[in-house]
Length: 480
Image (cartoon, rainbow, N blue to C red):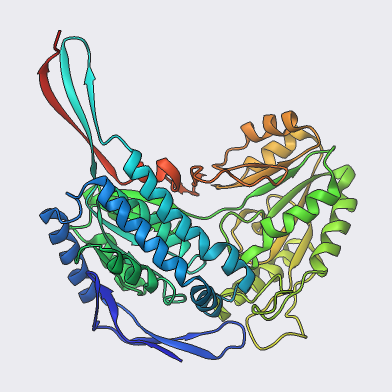
């Protein structure tokens, strides 16, 4: 069993003030590690180092090419540890090893390289003239960043925040979750070995008190948060008092709109990973499938058969599609929503139980709900589990209205044999990201949502811009 007894404070391992927690593998329920948790004292210590490093200019004053070189070197170091990191991540999260190997570990490495390239290519100073006067418009780092990340992306979510913040020249205090505090620590090791100066980055796994202190801290200029909408609201209120900058990536209840001419077989095959990868514990999961009433029976039958055929079990088995949920509390939440669906009048077409033929763990069968109306709580609230709700509609106009009848607006998809018709519907859905027929987004596409799904965008150039402040310097009369 791994013993992670120290915290990463200011670029080095340091004894923290908090207690240790036991990290349990959600598949098998055996303890796999102990990890030190941060207290408010540790947060204060880390913020003080971040503030000092930023004000001294040891990183904020470095050339963009120098910052890019450090990020690329850190990516190279993480790449050498891919196999180890994938197994650690699967152990703490419970997602299938194949997904850790294909996405959870390589994507963060790619993010670091992308932000290195963007920073090196970016024009930080731009002269503007109106014919009479000249100004120099400067992109400067926003300052000290407090980054708070969830358990469902133990390395990817930190990389999406730490990568652009460091590329911009910020100093960062990162607070990952209590549930998955292991893999992320490799990010600190890699960046330090790559040459990141001391004081610039701290990594403090911790609970609510540590997070609240980080959000409230007067020396933190920006909060970048991924998590629940409820917590996002609290962060907005707190940051409003001192007008701190924020980026919020929050919940989702994404709709897959199946148009009448869609290829049902292809849609069902493609929607399985879009809805159920990481056991449905992703904010972008396609958790509502909107179908024409004429196709309701056909789609329901096909979805039920496909979901019942998915392998649930040991995440280390290459044949496993769904691992466990991350914790007993998360399993209780999902099972509570399945019970609520029955109470509301929906039908469980398949799943809804704990599987019998799996090892001990927080497993739930992939579950299909039918007879769902969009007014039901199971159609409006984020379940964060392997649950798909089928909602029938009578016209395309009604489908668009149902898709938009949600407090969220993060992701979605449209399915049709006519790409132009699908695009026309996609344009009318109030959501930050839409896929046509399951197509993946281009790398570097802005990631974020409308309405209560958040504020701001991450990834790509939009993600880098989120860590800049604009300064205009008047230079004097235009020449010539």
